[in-house]
Length: 340
Image 1 (cartoon, one colour):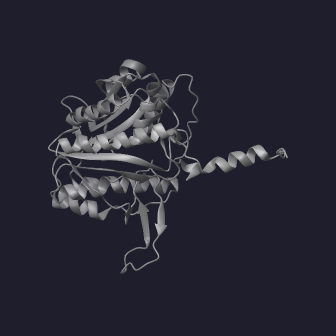
Image 2 (cartoon, rainbow, N blue to C red):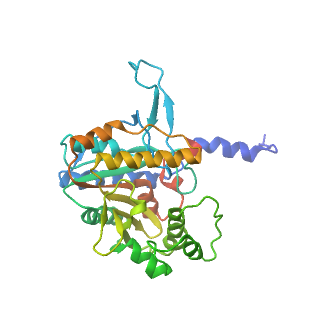
Image 3 (cartoon, helix red, strand yellow):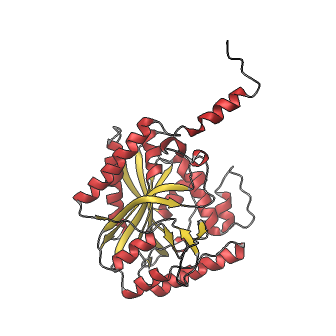
């Protein structure tokens, strides 16, 4: 007797295939090779691999990042039941640095609420590492070495070019990101239509990067953009240049249009760090967003004394996407969000 499919048979077949991985076997093998390369890379440089908590008493205060939270049902001895899934291992790694662990890295899963789509998954793999006594410019070189070593696994190469944030915007868009007003930044968007409601000056700078600059980045080049406007300092030090503006000692690394890494010459001042946490909280309150508790453990570690260092977070899934030549993060994940 021959099979006679009903009207909904195709949807049933597709639904039945949802248990299958979203990545191919080759993609999974490449991820395993990259993980091994990372560990060999840092072992050769005497950088210690560590594991830090995924659940924390504190959340990420960054207004542009949303944290997951959950309620713990067991004994807490008076501590809050609400715990937060980490958006990066940064704060815990800095506490280890303050405790004297020295150069260290972590390769693990992190979680961000609301980030799901072609290039985003709510849980993803981050590689974060810290180098004691280094500044952000020196760390750029090591990031490039790491990425170049990974690219060699698929027979690719990419040269490194370092450019200052201000020079990039001036040279490509003809607008000064330090001095230009919002109207000038909006005009530099060209034919890209954006609803301006509620957008700040830094929002326009970010939109110019993602919509006007990134799409034109050379896919055969590692581009390191360094020394951001002080208003975009995040957790980086700020310095004032002789006769020039204040800049954040921060960098981002791109492989073609794909952003791979974000790094800082790390802030050491606990008072300034607490002030930045407070400013983040105020931005969240104005937006009506939830304000996670700040990380008192990190502030205590900074007060005790964290060594001068530079740190960077690199998106492993983004790197794999670039290596595989795909714009879909699902292609490098065993199971993406829809199949988790």
